[in-house]
Structures are given as C-alpha cells and as structure tokens.
Image (cartoon, rainbow, N blue to C red; front, side, top):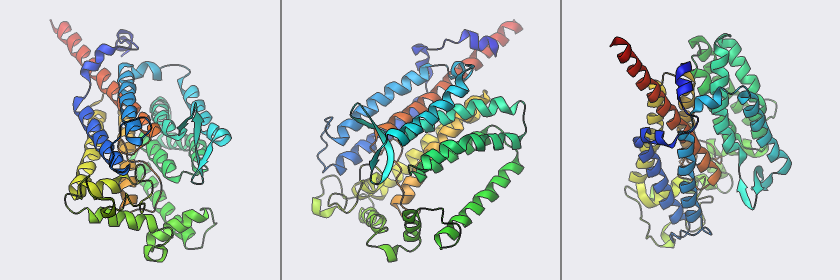
Length: 401
C-alpha cells in the first residue's frame, strides 16, 4: 500500500479517463430535468441569462462539472493521510457554521445563509461534504485501536456541535441529513450488529418522543412552528388554510398532472405552480413542478434517476478495497438517497413540510456545487482503487514470471 501511495500523484488530469461514465450520465440527466423544471417554474420562459434562475443553474452545472473533475483528479488518500487533516477539517466545519451565527442573513425566518461578494451561500451544504471526509478518516483510524462502542460514542460527541449549530439556524432537515451521513460512515466502517440494533431502538424511542412533544407532553423542546408543521402533517384538514396549505396544493398539482403531465406549453390558468399557489417552486417544491408538467412518468423518471445515482455509488463502495473509500461512497450515496426521499416525501405529503433541495434538480448553487464535489470524490475513490488493483495485478504477473 505504501508503494501505491508513493507512485500515485497528488493531482493528475490523465486519470479522468477512468471515471465512471454511467454515473456521469445519470447525474447530468438529473440536472437536465432540473433545468426543465426550473425553466417551467420561471413562467415557462426558459431564459438562460444570469439574471434568471435557469441561467444561473446552468452556470452552476458547468461550474459543478469542473469541481467534480478537479476532485476526481486528486488522490483522496493523500489528503486524508495528512497529519493536520482531521483537526483542520473539523475546525473548518465549526468555523463555517459559526460564520452563519455571526454574519448570517435571515430568509423566511431562518438564518442559514451568508453573503459573499453579493452572492448568497449556504455553508451547511459544504459541511455535509466535509463530514464525509472527516468521518471516513477518523473512524477508520480509530477502528484500529478502539471498540465499536468507543467509535460510536466518539462519533456522537464530535458530531453534536455540528448538529447543534445547524439545528439552531434553524434547519432541522439538514440536521437530519447530517446525522444520516454520520451514521452511514459509522455503519460502513464495520460497526457490530448489536450496536446497530441498539441504534435502531434509539431511533424508535426518538420518534415516540417527538410524537409526545407534539401532543403537548414532554419538555417543550420543539419550536412552535415545528409542532404545528407536524400536526398539519397528521391532520392536514385542520390546517388547510395555514401550515398544510402548501402541501395540499403540492399534492393537488402533482395529481392534476395525470400520466404524462400538462406539458410546458400549458396556460398559466391551467397550472397551480404558475398561479402562485405553490411557493418555492424552483427549490423545495421543484418535484411539484415536474409532477404537474411531466406527470406520473416524469415523477417516476426522477425517482429512478435518484435511485440509479445512489445505486451506482453504492456499487463503487462495495467494490472498493480501501476502507476509507468505501466509507466515503456509502455516506455520499446515503446523502443523495435520503435527501431525495425527504424532498419528494414533503412534496407528496408523506413527511411534514420542511425545506430541503432535491439533489441535482432543485435550484441552489451551494447544494449543487457540494453535490458535484461529492460525486467527484466518489470518482476519485473509483479511479484510484482501480489503479491500485491494476498495479497489484501487474506486480503479481511480474513476480510469477
């Protein structure tokens, strides 16, 4: 292994020829559907200028492809092997989230964004990416000298500040995705089945605790609007004019799309998303636009693309010989599939209303660039794992000769 690291250059564009082109095709197909949905949501004009969401999203996709290519060209092992990587990565995550606390701007009652040169950025999206890198190295390094319980406890303690700072923005949905990323890293690192069973019991108890909080018991830890959103999810008919208004309109719009949708040329009076009944139609409720314009067929296509992207990443994880590479891919795949599930479930009423983008499809440059960086990291894992395998095979053949 030491020889492999010495032979491998830190950065090489030539290795891009070994990328997973099937994964690229799936990701770019999802981006294309996103452009169609965003263009439809902006009054069906499809103006591709930087003054319009569709144009900025297209520029973001181009920038994302460049980010992914650069990430794939870097040997991820050389970064993780750095002596200062773990403390630097952790301090960077805390620093980004603290920047939101100190300099963040409020949008719709939440303080999640900071302004950089006139551009709004959401640091929590980059933190998701950094979490994968941090825990991939931390857990594998700790696994050599500690038990599963020590690993779980350490991961939980280190993750608490990150989760707390994200939750206080408030951004409960992103906090849950971060928790899933951490759990995915711990699981992929080879946690014992007994610990996994215990974590499942804890998750069940947490769900029961939330229901008790909503019903009026408990300690009142949930914010008022969080209680009301959950109650509106459980009893939408009682909150049809308030907290369930958006979800009900979303489900109505998706249902009105039928099998093949109303198309992009439908009149304004024929679509709910263009008449203002569905807010955040380019971001959190982009799936609603797809359902109304492309129908059941479009919804199924989006779901299949998300499943395909995650499945392809999981396949790379299972084939990878480097434990850290497997952890990275497993966490990245979980990030995409869980966030997709949450977004689609909110739009269809399966989960309480909470704002979270649909990967590669919703408008939002912070989310888009972070996801492309994660795809590039997965590509780096695949590229360098294949090179290790090829070099090992060549060395073995030479020794046999």
